[in-house]
Image (cartoon, rainbow, N blue to C red; front, side):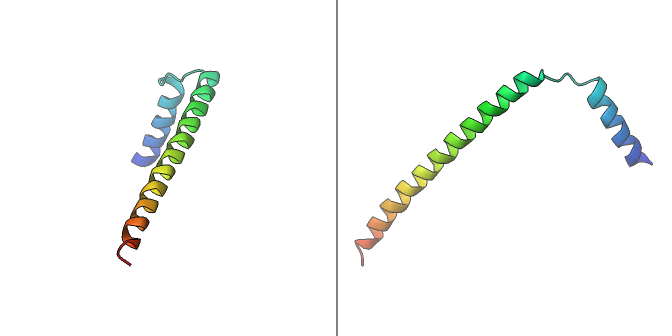
Length: 63
């Protein structure tokens, strides 16, 4: 029964003792995180393509 009590106590703590940010602020923060995640993914893609193209040209020199 230790696991069951732990889960019950965890839910009580989440409901009563955790300070949650307002819903509107959480939505704005989520949008900001999503936008920066997309920007970062595009940046990583572009860097990957740059190195891929550069390496292909470098190795084609030897063929």
